[in-house]
Length: 303
Image (cartoon, rainbow, N blue to C red):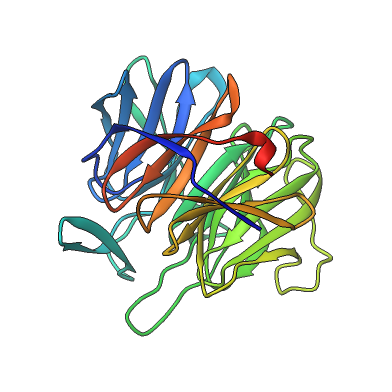
């Protein structure tokens, strides 16, 4: 495994506790989880797109150009320590987790889904659209002071309103989610356990849950040194980039589960990145404790 120091350009800082970067049409959208805001950055200048409340955690562009938001529901514990914003998990009351969407032409916010099989979601973390139809998303669960609720992987078809629990439980919290470029495999991180799981997915909303785990996934990679695995993004070549905390790196994992490299970040709590559609070795990363949006660039031949 290689340790790589990529070229880092700070685009803007002081954005709050940020996650869920998404680049669309030259605009970078992101979530300010602590403030309950969706922000956009154009030419290095940030502005507020919408106040959705709760704890917006992940973003995806859906049909008709709507911006979809994975909202963990808020009621989180925060600390401001020496100018850094730190998250200390969730309270287990007074939260409202949901997926919602924003009409980018009117900025109207609409609720999409908030329960499965009569159970309200605990802390929806991230989401993506399957080109075959439907939305894959994760629920992190909640870690109270003396208890924990479980998370899992879910699928929702907005046209039929069908919502399914497809991989449960990821006991230490389902966090990042991604599809392989050929859409035949689904990946998810188990945050507190530092594990990357994979499932074959023969069709939209269907997973091969024959792996040797409670949720049927196959263990692709176990992070060393008790690292926490936050959100992930899948590169065009199939490699998986995972925000690893508190080591402060993006771990690069091959589709075969090989730990190829660590991209070193200037702070301990990167949360996610999105790739530049015009350059496979350029990405935009959210560094949460300083509220920094950074452009990072690396030598693709390094791994």
